[in-house]
Image (cartoon, rainbow, N blue to C red; front, side, top):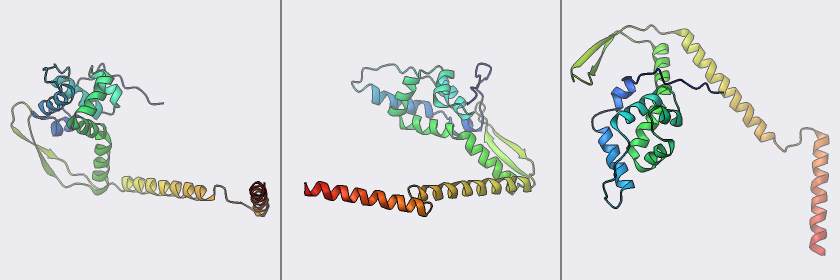
Length: 200
């Protein structure tokens, strides 16, 4: 059973996903798309989605919550979230990216652990001051254990898939001579029954 994450004590911050995808144009673009889809008569309906709710929703998704849990944590009703997904392609796309965030981060971390990394600088723009900040990234030595774990995982799933494919192919097939005789008898009886019905 999936353990529910308590989000009451989690304060939305700016992890790398938010820094990468949440910019000044994202919220207005989503609101524009939702407005066009829901306000076809141009009556100027107010959208309940705020920039803060959008930010929080994407944050909660990016740390591993599913759509429903992230909606609740960001105070967006689930049925409203579903309407937004239908109405706005941008909302749907960025929400999908946020939901896959942990998987992407995990793959990146595994890649770095296997390949290693030379010392380097990472540059990003501060969201408030707009100043470019450089962070020193330490050297990472290749980790043979991570590589071995990954190869074992790949081999395990290959064996698992091959085993199931083999079982799928054998469904309904006679496993021995006795089963083959029983199958032949059933087919003969069915054939005789069809012939009898055709003559009557």
